[in-house]
Length: 328
Image (tube, rainbow, N blue to C red):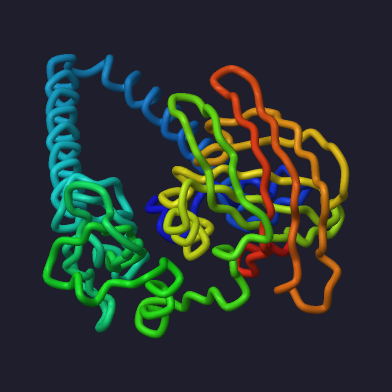
């Protein structure tokens, strides 16, 4: 399944006690399974009877028939495999291959737009890429056909039309490619410096961007959802596609109680449930009761240690409305 719009972060709702919605198809599947068993049993009985009859007849004839059937089945399986491979271009069923070889979900109409495929008008990728060397001035960002990327020092024919921030990049493409709304997500204006540094399994990190959303539960109450990334563009892409595993890859995620003080939290790096550890979160100040969510903030410190983990630092985060979740 392609993860541009949907990803395994949705599984985190299970940790919060959200009930699983009953799927009518489950019952239907049980009925079908049961019917299949009865049919299979009936068929086995019929075959047994047929076998007894065959014993009294010609053995050579039965052997020839069986061999012919096996050959036909093998041919059918080969034809089916060949057809599936041709239709999906080597991708899994339900996905199609883009011109650059990337597989995307067939459910997304313009999923191949950032991969050399058809794009809606106004969403075409900019011809702007990051060149060699250090950025000599202010950061620059370009549209990929789906998200934004840092391109300073820029090279390409569209370098005169790049953007000063990831938010500007997304807002400029919101009407044609979105909607993307960062008006209630001023993550690029933190209330205090953000610096979470150290080691996660397999790599060193220096996380200087962050924000948080709110989970509004029913039986489990409300929770904070803290997000940290190395830079604004990584965080902005995650905010634009919060359900996508693709844009969770380099994001630190923490679910926490909305209370000042010290608490133990589960920390995840990247796709949920794949790289996790326990950490100590200290919330020093918190505002989530103001009538205006633009006033929401949380400040605190984080310490994480464990196999492959060694993180520490402090933060002052602004609230980001697009990250809010509501229990069904």
